[in-house]
Length: 386
Image 1 (cartoon, rainbow, N blue to C red):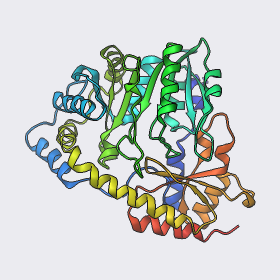
Image 2 (image 1 turned 180 degrees about the horizontal axis):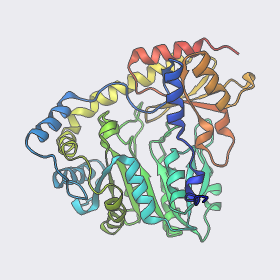
Image 3 (image 1 turned 180 degrees about the vertical axis):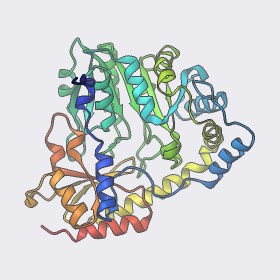
Image 4 (image 1 turned 30 degrees about the horizontal axis):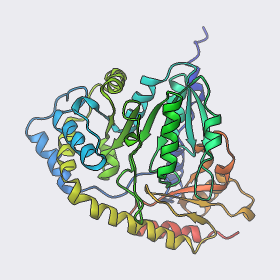
């Protein structure tokens, strides 16, 4: 008997490009500047807090929406940094920002709903919208400064549009949205009665004095925005998977209805450790920002000696580079050539686009790496000559 088909929705789901490139990096003994996670540990004192929590018996299920101490610290953080007054019912702790995205998108999107996504996009946005039965609609962030056309944006809005997804600071481009851009998006959301999911996992990682603004602070946005962040990104502990979603109580209640059946509860001792970590954010952030500013400057300076022109990021820990036009290669071809013959793993950018062909002209590099790893990787890149 012939077995029945799997869900039509997963037929559109390929293997993540990050898994593909990391596998190739291992096979070809390449320096991995592709996948976006640090190759170093976060602060040891946070690990000590997790161990302390384990020894104190905090090893069973946490409350579904997260431990109260962590949720209250997050409410204090939003008051201090963004002047947003929320309470602990406005916060849901999730298994990383990835699960926060999944739960939020599935809480908001029905079959046939259209969702505006800025491209290049973090690939989970497209996948989650499709899995929810939604239809992605794309607005392109165009080189060289990755700005978008306001008219193009409004033209994508129809009577089926329900949600806008914003990623700020932006992965993969390193863009930080300007006040004027965020103001325009917020006015469109109010004008057309749309929801916003704002992925702000790199909220504390901007460079050269650039300021991050959270979109929920704009008029009319607090009641229609879910803001997502990640302690894993902030404290270089991505494997702990402690993320969170913040919004008005009605929206977070909807998120929790998905979250409870996706993961129910998140790692208990890690939540206790991150509750302590966030109380020390003021003392931690200056060194954190200084470290990544130096890493950004390091990779940009070394890229100047290659045939790949960089687009200097304003935030996040990624940098986009242009493939030399005279190479005659697109991003997939170049990424495969570099990992196999030059032993440096990058990420081809076309997988982050649904409409424009600009992605075929660029690669993404991650500089959340030890300095020696960055230097070795770019030295390998320098060996490529058109």
